[in-house]
Image (cartoon, rainbow, N blue to C red; front, side):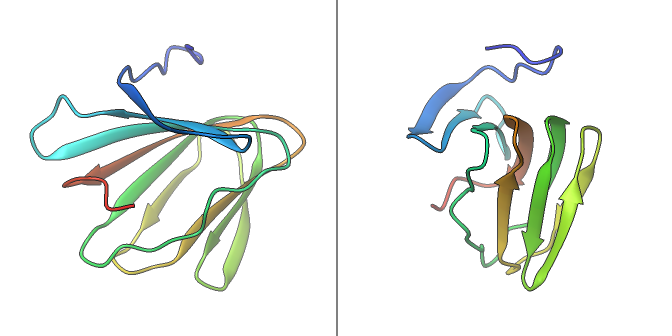
Length: 108
């Protein structure tokens, strides 16, 4: 599915009632991933040791949790996630679409 010109391509790596996650692994050192998070659903919270991430919010609204801090996210927002920081995304009443870029390989 294409969202406002932000189709990253790739393959579905996770899909359930909460979301669909696709990874594009065409680059040597970076993974570009997209998540379509269904309304009023949340991602599985997690953290990575030794891996930073960048989240780019494309469509919809929701909340982002970084450790104990939760804040609203909107289309056009960019969130930098430092090494070892717990992170989780919560969709609002509409579908939330975002792109994530991280180095290395998927660890969860």
